[in-house]
Amino acid sequence: MSDRPTPDPAGMNEMAGLIPAPRAVTGYCPMGCGQTLNLIAGTVLCTAPDCPDCQRLTTIMADQECEHIVELGEARFTVKHPLRERANDELLTCGIDAAINAAGIQAGGPPAPPGTYRVRFIDGTLSFQQLTPGGQ
Image (tube, rainbow, N blue to C red; front, side, top):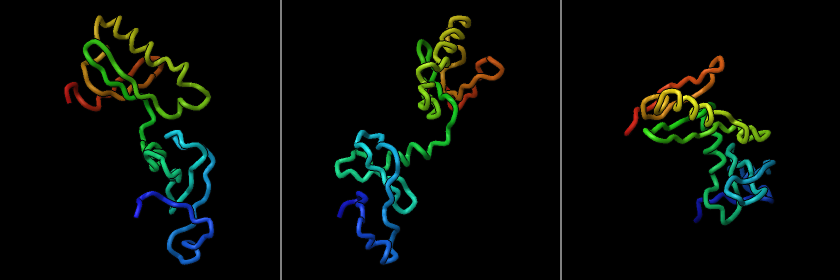
């Protein structure tokens, strides 16, 4: 028996009182399966038989972080952009990378000690809230 959700077009599960019948969800599976999303028992799942992670959208939606997460090293950094920047192509015009680079140039090194930070602009200035110190 597979863990993969299966559509119940006849509604037999719902009629039997087991679980509600899947309902189509507008949108695309983030794993590239296409328009294969369904609401099953309160969870959005991909019902494509070959989906490598049918719960990926649910995992993405469960992430409560809404700011940039930045991992600073001695010589480089990586940025995890918030999901909201995917809409209207805001990700393509996000200035956080340039601002961190400029802050590093001004500081003559990393703009904060190595570690993982929640970074946001406050009154036009970068604010670094440390989440974990470097090396952890």
